[in-house]
Image (cartoon, rainbow, N blue to C red; front, side, top):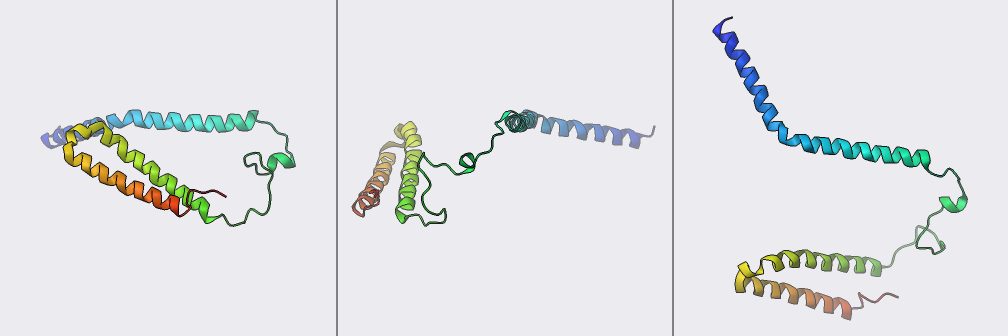
Length: 139
């Protein structure tokens, strides 16, 4: 064997060991992904195999909160519905900001307290505005 050939083999072996070491932390993630996909496919197959086969017009129709279907499915929704949904998202985001702040508020000091008070006052003003405009009334 020539010295150059030995060097090439060593380089290849070193490169493959480096790649194995680099990819090794991702092995649990890959295994987890395979297990989750296999479980999902198994459950879909099992529900299809074991599920009821009876077809009825009532079972095929849409079901919404136990109320009978009235009108067309192409009716327009009230703007009020979207306004309530947006207000829900807004106040949900408020909670997302409040929880981390409550965890570290001591390290933020007075500046962090004032900042959060300004945030809460702005949200309270928005809430009062929505309330006065009738955004929370459902008719």
